[in-house]
Image (cartoon, rainbow, N blue to C red; front, top):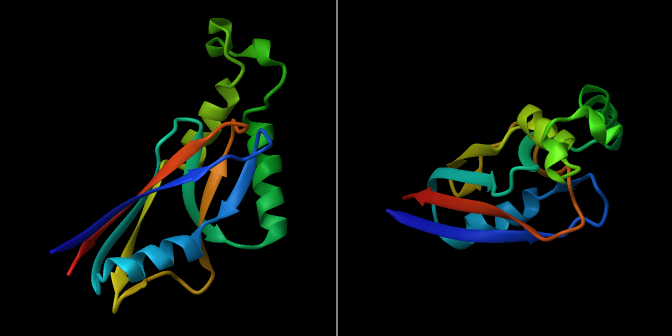
Length: 139
């Protein structure tokens, strides 16, 4: 069995942002040499997400607007978590909605994604360095 573990680092300059990381993950799959297996892509911070969806700018904007309606950043006083001195309770809630990780099958040495599927890193409390774990295993 082959395996590859890699950490991707991001520093999104704004509070929220969405990065398409599909091509980076594809390069790691190629580098791993795995032909048949699985690829885990996992946000290692509790205020960030990894998810799969369409790479369409309007949809990314829709996500941002929708998430802000569900868990608005302000007023920060509305959240009990923020009474600890933090101001990022909304980011924790947004992460729960968008998810922690994705697992994608590797078939014939390629990510086995649907026709419009792309892998995204979602940041909900940016302006600092955060990492994503990529773990590839298989034959």
